[in-house]
Amino acid sequence: MTPAELSRTVLHAVCRAVEDGVLRVPVPVPESVRVERPRPGGSGDYATNVALRLAGPAGRQPREVAEILRSRVAGTRGIERVEITGPGFLNFTLGEGAQQALVRDVLWCGREYGHGTALEGVRIMFVPVEELRAGILTHTVVQLLRTQGAAAGVQPDAREMLRPVPAPSRDLFERLGPDAARWALLSVAAHDHPLAGDELLTQHEANPLFRVRYAYSRTRALTRNAAQLGFDSDPRQHVDAPALTTAIGDYPAVLASAARLRAPDRLARHLESTADALLGFQHTVLPFGDEKPSAAHRSRLALAEAAGTVLAGGLSLLGIGAPDYL
Image (tube, rainbow, N blue to C red; front, side, top):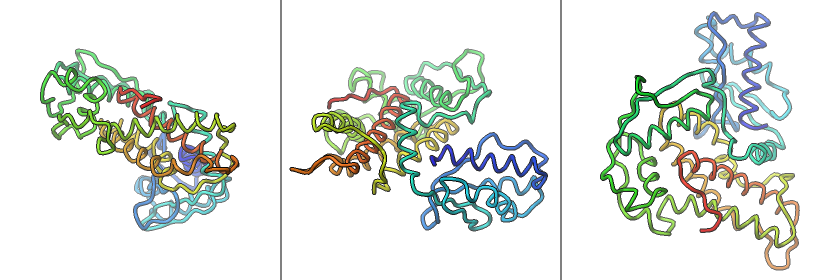
């Protein structure tokens, strides 16, 4: 079960509880349910606060609402255990095959993995601006909002305007090139001063942009090398790579929050985390020496390719290229 499938499963449980009259909510049922990784020390693979959100309107205690939902979700295929923690959080432990389902979903969706419908039917327009960073930020936020189903764009009579700290100079694109310049302007929060140094031009892992693009190029190299060895990807087995699996699984929630908060820097930071996890994992993908390719190698390659899909999709939304060779 993927995070998106889990979200839909919980939402379906909410709708069933309302339709059955067990949960009387005098406000519209939420259009989506947000699931995210538990905080440090929390239990399970994912958690949601939907019971706390519904408790007030329903006139019930949060843990009581959580139990209503837990009973409707427990036993669903792909969910091993559902626990109620704290004031009324629902914590989910996914069953065997969850990682494989996630990887298949990513590879099937391609660069549209993580796109959702949370803002479907919502129209969001921004005022066009001439300042360099504000213009780049506005264009990128529009792209992020569209990934969530919003009808977003720029028009002169709009009311919303993004006002980041301005770019240090107009020649940033000439000095750094388009990819590095966009990373400099988008990878830090809008209220902070953008990056301006030539460190974004160095081909070194201390350069976050290089690290992200290098990680993507490594996923492409792994696919090419595997083909030369006579095998391709097939996510049949579980792979022991929790950091990389988490980074891939969290991508939809990161996209949603980056859009909602008008904060592409959140996406940039997540791409860095994904790249770091991939670079720490890549050495396990290909066989060593006389070792023959196995189902484990095919599954590891599939996980690496899923990470590459996330990296390429995220870079594309930032307007930055993802080279196959670097």
